[in-house]
Length: 114
Length: 114
Image (cartoon, rainbow over all chains, first blue to last red):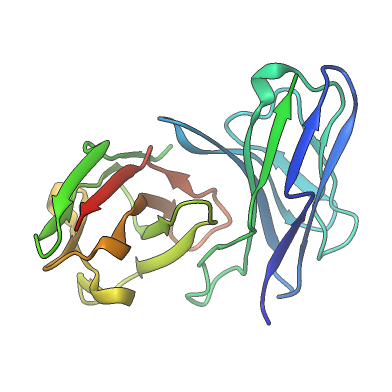
């Protein structure tokens, strides 16, 4: 089954404690991205990756890092989380070109930073 | 850069009423357009998409959308809503043919009253 998985699904942490949210897709997609969803603001892109070792900033990259060492995985790293990073996070992937530009979303990770 | 506007933030309808959710985008070139739905507590799912061709696009669950290039609009419609359509709806756009990011609108919460 084609899917995007994220872990953990729920996370409560404290300010300053480094955390990683994993994302994995089994569709061999080149393009992966991270979004955060906040009430009244919709989804905003944090980072995206066009392929292995190729990443770039989205609209709200401050306070986040990513890496793309393998095609299937795209972890999101919060080196020093702060309360304003409390949000719902979605990972997504898509293929490139040929009319295959539909994004597939993961189930979401709800993060609370105290 | 492209942007997306969804003017209706919260819509309340009775069952069997007709639905139209507005979506306008700003970008002068060729775009791909999407509508996603997010049911309570779930991740985003694709309702329908427009890449090219017939500007009237039919999606899942009886939804359709019409691309009007002259108005930069891609409004979502359904002739008769059901209680199960209660969800948040997001319009999204990306520049056709590239890896460019997908930009989402702020979403419209639809509440259908039985």
